Image (cartoon, rainbow, N blue to C red; front, top):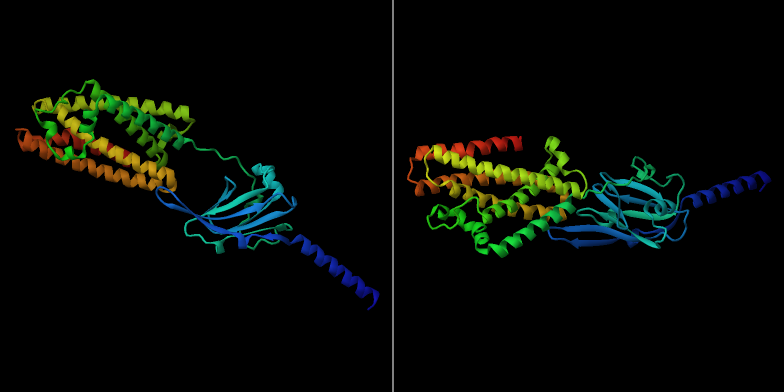
Length: 373
């Protein structure tokens, strides 16, 4: 073997040694990936998880491959959402700086996705040269700078406001237990007890009714803000922006506005009963529909709470369907009200139908058209 051949072999050996060092896998975590299923109130979360060692080899990097529509966490920090199959590389030094993991020895790497399995995820620790180990035609978000995410505190406000409503409801139950039970009894929706002479609740401007209307308006205002946030409604989107103090202010302003609208609604019904000479049935009419709205609002708050805790990503779809169900439920309640009044009020049915249309159906359809577009 001559000198030139020895030099060539030496050069090739150094080249392959350098390439090996540049692309050396220190630890392969693929065999350590674990499938975890966490159960919630409404549905379960499927997670692929592994604990990464970030205390050794500070010049090393991690290369991770995750499937489409998956959410990736490092520790308790959201790293990124992957809309498609993605391979990403990040160095241990970047982990220390961007995620403030300098004091950590190990950190959990978690991938969340429905129907995920360990074969779809891969992560390795090693010395890699300029993304040389990344597959072609795969997005690599490692070049993107980490940005401070704006934390949305709206649902913190939602549950705090809901606690306030429950607190007021508890006070109301302690002061007026029989009235609250009477108002929220769904069975009474299908009876004519509101129109009976024995009904003890016959005054609108009494403290028990005003207090209940305020609680109901607080609930409606809260649901309105959730609807604006999730569905969107032009300039009203400003009502769900800001910190918790601003959200509480907007909530109280909307509640005050709804309280004024409620009084105007009652006065309008009273005016219509005078026009059609229906006697003193305005409160029974108003109170019947108030009960219907109250029951529907309780159901809607429960639905929103469940999805806000478990599936905020489909909450807008749920609210759209809820609006449709509310629309038809209210129409059915108005029709039922007309049949009850036909049996209880000695009045011409044609004039009674005209009264219901004027007092309820036409205003409701106009408002529904504005809200639902």
